[in-house]
Image 1: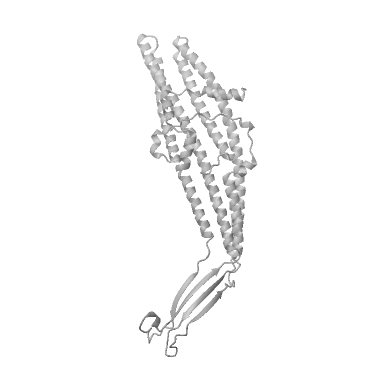
Image 2: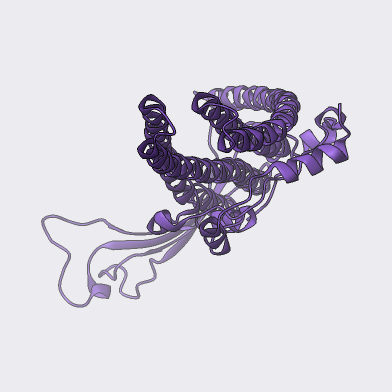
Length: 428
């Protein structure tokens, strides 16, 4: 086994050197940090989460509102035979009244509504943080997919060009009588296969571009998106540990905990419904002037008090529903904690496996590179046949693609571990 420092150095040396075309693409491409910044600004799921937070803020404003008073105006004592009389409104022979009613809440209902609204607003903000965590993980996964498909497309393209040059060289040697026609045919078959693989790799690269563009809201730039990044440095997966406090700080767990508190407050609010609210009212009555009341002194005032009687229903359903919601919120919290622990365990295991595969593939690729160089030299010297050369090239290309895939798997496993362990938690 090699040391961890040597392993890191070996990975750096084993990453294929990019071509000038690829370097130009990287100079105008996105880094993973830039992709995350664009994600935070334009991702549709994050934008929807922000709207949900704004809606929760509006609900908090509504929760703190006091009941509005009610203004009533009415007329009575209308004689259908005599009518209402002539003249201005004050001379009409009808009784008129103006009344104002105000509900007075008791049992701290408004205060509990406001507290419940604040808790739900905080939970909504934690939901936004959880959406952001998931979307950042998704953009990292897709980003490294794009980086891997770019590398695969480059390796496949270089391999196809190499085989094409080999076909041209073999045809010249065939004309000179140095090789058999069957050897040329074998090289042509491998050249066609390499060209097919290059087209397939290019199609995969375009699909990865589309996926990244959708995440960062850059569909109009799909064709020009490039991942400009080196692979993340490996970590020693068997030395990382899962911190329970870190898991507790994950936004999904924090949101679930806030909803438990909100459910408890909703229980208190439901019970407070049994505390009777009262309504108070004030009324002014005006009576028209009549021969018996020429001075118009029939005006009067009145005060009213209304108290509901819970003779038929005492809000038992609302209270029971609040109890059920509280139990459901506790279950959701336990589920969130369990999922956080299982995510962290699985991510740590996947990271350990990905690191081990990367270590082995890098070592194998280094050996295969030296063997491929020796085979090319031996073929040029006439020491080996074309079949041995083709086998060497196939092996090297397969190992290059395998190493590229393992680097992508390791990068995505590392991102998944960071997300599962709560290291990706950013409020946009």
